[in-house]
Structures are given as C-alpha cells and as structure tokens.
Length: 213
Image (cartoon, rainbow, N blue to C red; front, side, top):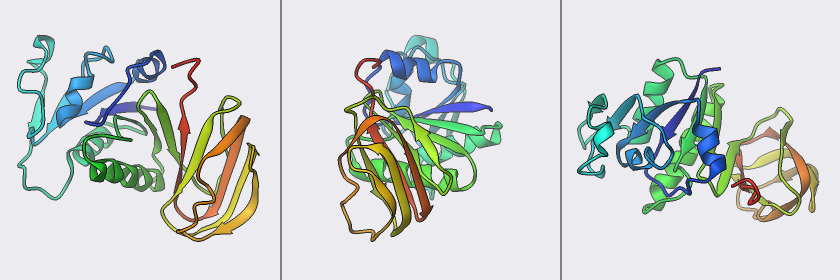
C-alpha cells in the first residue's frame, strides 16, 4: 500500500505515536499544514493551496519545496487538493494529520466529510492529531486496538442500521439509530473493540492511548 500523510492546518500534538505514524509515509502539505512538518520531522514532497494562511517564511530547509499554487476563489478546499494530489501519485492509504480540530470548526467538519468520501471510494483513511484518532466505518467488521478505559464515540452522518459494538462498556447488537440520536456518544473500551455498521455513514473517534502518545 502506498500511504500518504496529508498535513492539514488543524491543531496537532507531535507525540511519539504521531511521529511514528507519519514516518515512512509520503507527505503532502496543504497550505498552513506545512507548519507541522518540522515538528513531525518530515519534508513534504509537495505543498499545495492558495497560501492565504501559510507561514510567511517557511523553515529554510523547506524554501525549495515544490509548490502548486491555486487561486483563493476555487471550488475545492486546500485539503481536498492535497488529497487528490496524493491519489494522482498512487496513494491507496491516507493519514489526515491536523484534521480533527483547528481555528475554524467548518474546516474540521469538511475534513470528516472528505474522510468519508474517500473511504467510500475504497481508500484506507485514518485521521490522527496525536490526541485523537478517527476512522470511517462500514459494513465490514473492523477491530480497533484500544486500551481499557479509553473513551470513544461513533459520529453519525446519517441514520444507521445494524450498528454492532463489542468489547465496550456499553455494547450494541445490530441496533438501528436515527441520525439525531446521541446514544453512541462517550463509550468506554474494555480493551480492543470491534464495530460494524450494516448501513449508514459514520466515523469512530477515539482517544489516543496516553501511554504511547
């Protein structure tokens, strides 16, 4: 699998776990996401965006970085452009870094939508900022190696059918939930968990294990 890390402008904690996750991947920076490169100890192969929020003076070792500028008035976000650039270069897996928070909540929401979109196209997608991790969910049973006591939630983007959660303090067995239900908020792992969504659109958001941050 060709795995790319996409550096986005949201907040990150450059923990050992995040640095290890990015290590060995190919890296593309989206606009102000470039500021994460130094603390993650990587040099992107490409920097894209309209550069309206990028650092005015990137680190000296990044001044020769290949750039693809775009107009500010455009139909795609900088993160979307970076993801498409990765796919053009053969990406089959994406690690979205700095996607889960930031100075604008609409940007974080857009990143969640993008994660769901590309996962639906068969791309392996993970979001990680050093503090929280997130993964799109689907009809295939998926296991997640969470430590006992770790908090997690299922974020719904539609009504869900056949939601099953095992290995949690509050398990569910093939439950149907409307979009407006908050039943899946703030669950607790007893150890590794498994989640299946027979039909619907959702993500799992979990705390990173503090012992390996």
